[in-house]
Amino acid sequence: MKRTFALAVAAALVGMLGLSVDAFAAKGGIPGPPGGGEETAAQNLSVPAILVGSLGTLACGESDLAPSELVSPTGNPLTGYDAAVGYYWVQKVHTWKAQCFNGLDASVFGAWGDNLSGDAKLKVGSPIRVEIVLTNMTDFTEAEGGLGTIPSGTLQGYNVIKLENTLDRLSAYGHQAGGDEISGWTDIPQDVGQASWVVHDAGMQISVENLDTGQFVVPLQPIAPEINATGKIVYGYNLRVSTEGNYQIRFNTTPAVAFMGVDAGEFDANNAYLDIVVVPGGGQGGGKPQR
Image 1 (tube, helix red, strand yellow):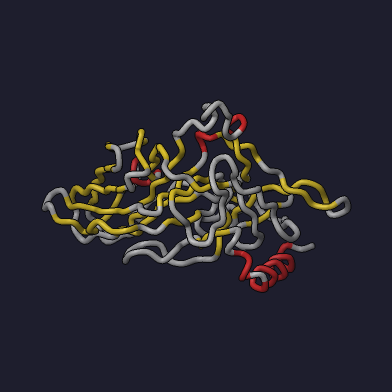
Image 2 (image 1 turned 135 degrees about the vertical axis):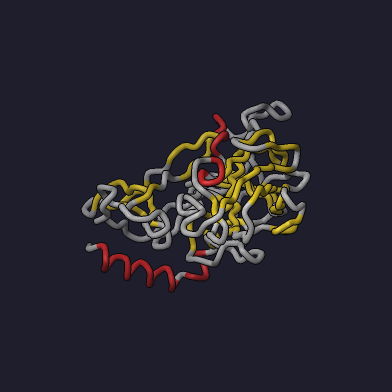
């Protein structure tokens, strides 16, 4: 099947199945506060997750003892991508869902977007993409009451990659299909260790302070989660400032979610802080978010 025709057919099927798609995917840009993400087509959860509080209509297991089942992709995979050989199940075309479960609390490691902690120039008047991902630091292989929890500390998900040689935001993303047109298509799930599971905190908040003036350009406010192209739950905000200088970004979790570390900046139990410098000029100031 040619890719263009398959895309049209698959897109039509997704539209027809719209009432059920929400059970498998969360919106890639759930409307949030001003400056936050914009609503986009549905992206599928591909990395196993712990939900501390609900995430839209994403349906997960009741606890770590009973995570939801892996949901295999729908439809027929696509081919013809210039950066990946073979057939792929594709974000925004097919639906699938990694295993996940609801938790009462979590310990996490915070990873900031590469553009914030790297060498990218952050400029006045240009969009600065602010992102953080929370990954699990709780050991679910430890015995509780003499009973093990999740065997070997693994859940299943999918390894989603970039499929096209174009800008990240324009490329298709997907995970490889097994089988063939004759014998039938199969998925290729991955065992994901507990240190790579992502965590969602329904009470996450963001603020951004101009350290030179002491004024908050973004007052403390709730921030909506997203599922990005690779299927991770992330917290993203499109920041734009009108004055050069020193700024501090802060992500604030609920008491149920505790930071145990960050890859840049500072942290305490319920806050991750990162200082950035915004320089004069226009153009592309945001750099690339993480994947």
